[in-house]
Length: 383
Image 1: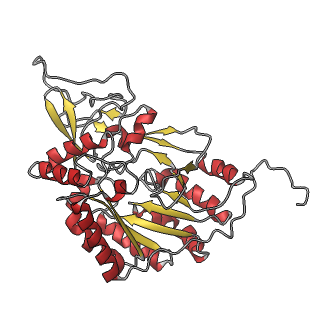
Image 2: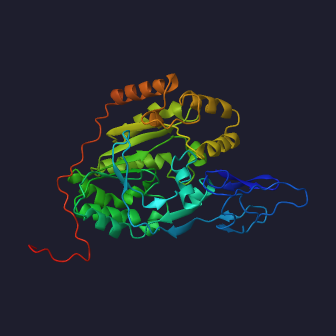
Image 3: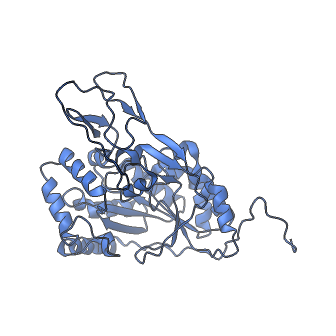
């Protein structure tokens, strides 16, 4: 997997990152662009073009290689941890994202534009300049303890992955699960990482009470394509193993074939579902590629680098599913697309799910929820 770094003399390959550029976010007043004035040779330490040039680079030991790109972490001081939505096409109304930005580097990630709100680029910054919530567990405890709180499943991993590589050291997702398990609160998880297996003990106990389910997002079974498209996510083979391991532990698990990209991975839809069902998945879903805001240009760059022979065909087919545009944000259509191409994919999915006998996810139990007591809570009169 390579990343193209813009320099004065054209692109420089960088391994291990998904985006090929680092253009300033849409809220920035100024943008910056390098150009070749013919006076000098490119230096390996030249920064990536963008709003945060050079802030997370280290010189390479090999002078012929570009500088290494470190992943940096910044604490998030938000006073709330639960995000609420009223979207009619989502099966949940609340979610938690322990991290902003995602080191997995999936080029198609619909969450990339959210990084612009932090003053970062949706490009390389999104996968290398992460923001984490160190007080997530205590903040969650306080929110769940509010008198007006009404229990319903909380979704983890709806924007960025809760099990990206830094979770191994920070353990923020684990701390959130401990709070939810303690107070009997139901949850759902979507991830591309086998790291979810580290919390199998907690999840298995919650599953016994009917309070959790997990979905593995599996975009492709082609290891080479996965390395290009989602460079730091677990391999497709490892994700399928995780489906089996969670299923064996009694945890309801599903597979999400998402997103489907015309002429890139859409031909794999049925095989992904077949492998998932054989591994023990009981639920399945899919989405069509979404290209809101800055993602469209990032995805075009990626196509031009890795699939120049079909880049134009891919984008034409994407627009066929979006009313002639790169993206249509209309509720329901934004997830699955519209038109004959989208309808055919929907038909294929429906037939595969029926043929394979997916029983579907269970309804999670919310009746056992007991609000936690904040650490500074005084004794109740009737305690």
